[in-house]
Image (cartoon, rainbow, N blue to C red):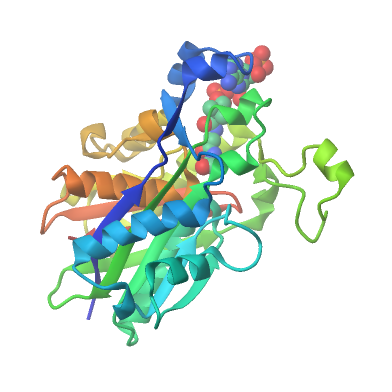
Length: 324
Ligand code: UT7
């Protein structure tokens, strides 16, 4: 018995930050950002808006598309590294807001792979007896962004995407998901302060340790390699080739990464869903946001083979294959 995605939903905040806006904030240019990343604009939360607000709106849309009530959910998993606060979990806040009175709820931190990791759990839970699991990827990356650091502030955005996972009656659904982690590369992308190693203090705030630091160039190289490897892994496992894939929904970090991966896999870029030009890198939200857009645009149809691949801090990397 497979599990399958019964409905998708997404939400991005209204506020748009363009490359022209960033030119006024740091020493950068629209042409550098577009050429080096493909990003033209990103969405940012407004005052008082937090991760659970975005997650709730995406979840409500996914439930509506699935034709389900929140009270039917057994479990809610939110993939995020920018939850409302360390405690309680953002998933519990969503659970209360949507009225999922029967659902257990927890957050999962696998950085940009958070959604695919959470989808893997949902797949297992449904196969072992739960009926409906809500999986959300939601991030307010702007809350951990140093807006004076041009190396990172041009990259990230805020948003949320959600799917409802339930039983499949046929052969369709989630075929397999493959997860990986490697703490040897933990220093490539990190938020050094604010945890138990370096608790928040006046000194840590002055040193800006609450913000994301990234070794962009090294991350880029690892990203291309791990994306290529994990796509090959999931395709080999399912005895299919890139030719069989109808739609590729990758983590949206950088258009140059996506082009390099497509080239190495000899995979036409036209099959790849790209929305990073409008939303930047929204970490765990990026795949479910792109997936929902592709579903709504009619790019993902029944019977299609849909490929997912992500990488992120940890390092983590992951891939999945779905017969829609
Ligand atoms: O989802 C999380 C995973 N993260 C990623 O996937 C990010 C992966 N990395 C990247 O996407 C790219 O490495 C970046 C977009 C972050 C940077 O692009 P790059 O081509 O690797 O640039 P670089 O870091 O090698 O820097 C090239 C130059 C440097 O100047 P010098 O040292 O050559 O004089 C940077 O200081 O570009 C400079 N630079 C900028 N210039 C204008 C860096 N950021 C900017 C900027 N505007 N925003």
